[in-house]
Length: 514
Image (cartoon, rainbow, N blue to C red; front, side, top):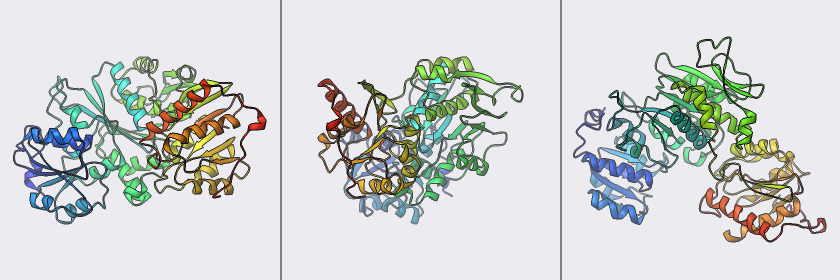
């Protein structure tokens, strides 16, 4: 145990002179350095590279910056003799500096450990810090975070979506306006770091949820078992409601194995008829049977699938996210009427099953955010029989299971990206009757134009062309949003100059690499 660190359990504790190495100068790393500088700590930031804006601001804050290769532990880091190392989420467990710190007995934190300790900077009217609601899962985190915050706001609570969604938790904590609830999207990377901590300072949220679990980030964690263990940390020390997905047994098992505060309830959700402590769907009506006194004999209506369909929110995985968000909001006493009102104005972010065009009877859908097989499976379930645009960096995840489960149901597959061979091989084995077309190693600016040209020749009246890559984007694009934007631009450009094509001009499938 480190007595100095143990005493640092408040914004108002004496942080002065604490020697800290901050790893990484992304938005999270900068928020950590900025916070520690305000607290009076002695901070060294070590980063492979530095954004010019951040690099310019650090000296103003009194923070030193070291840049260079972090493949080995820099002498400057050792010389700083840190009392604690705080790592940005991108640094995996096997990273040289993280491993050095753990081997030499230097405590390693993520940004959430620091944020939890200083969460009392701005207090609520009752003199207590904002409550935390934690949201994780392989897919659906951002949408559920936004939904939950929107519902809480509609219920009259001051709520801030933060964390992995883009706004660091430390920035939300230091906002002078203050909040009643922080709705924290939390990644498996952040959860891994949180899992290293022990004792009273470990995060103890009001409510928590793991939406689902599937293979992802295996290169970072090293194995699926390690990834699952990190995700399970979300439920630890939860005080009021552990929300889990009844359709995903792994999330229920996580709740069963969690060390929670006495009195915490397990709340299930899925698309079926709910039990007495669940949220679900009855005859097209989303209902709550968890947060009412008469839950064994009655239910509260939240909204209907028909109403959601009018807002473009009726895809099965989106309905599941809505139920999870509603469970979190209901745990904070948000009335059903406020949840219904929130859903009447809610819109999905770009690149999440976003309809970008309808032309000649063909619907073009951008779900570029489907960066792993689990997300793509949900998208394919929402659009059966689609012309599927798939491929990119698979991140060590086997796509065979997705193709075996969903591949035979698509009209055709257009395969892009650096790891096309694994996808075409999976189709040859599990869906040999499906036409498969490959986009060879085209330049970034040409990939989506070629995709659209192929798709126009395949799709007919009533069809959907679906970009749901099941893979990361960084082999050919700057980000999933860049990939989606290029797809949308190519669709609109091609439609603008006429998208008709005769059957005789239809492309012929290739099995190269199969």
